[in-house]
Image (cartoon, rainbow, N blue to C red; front, side, top):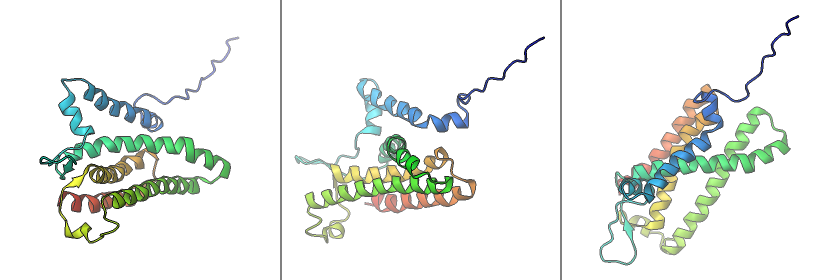
Length: 208
């Protein structure tokens, strides 16, 4: 008697399938980011890679403190740091939020809300602390009118980096909707929210 052949279930999804990309998106994105980092180390590609990694539009004139203005090259920097945001998002999800969610035994809908809220909480706490540090160091806290009286004016390194990260975070939220398997009925609303948030920061930033 011929024994029936057992069907072996392949737990690993096909390469480049939607499920494969979603499961391994952090590794894929980190590899893409590493291409830029390695490019910075190679003399031939340093000028190109530096546009994505280092802050551009330096307007320092015979001063010790570097000053920057906004410009079109900032979008390359925003793109690179949005990749970093995706990787950090995955790390926080896997090593922090997932561990808490397993203990809470949440339903699928509540789990999605918990993950989103957790990610935003981390981002807002870091942003608030960073903004406060900049406000103190640049004397905005003690002379709040400088925020509009000196506008537009060149930015310090940390202030420009802060804006870049804010833009990068909002940009990274768009592909994250795909990576997090957002429901179709919620996708448009959440994508619109991310685009609007990105525009609200980008418009005043680039109009400086």
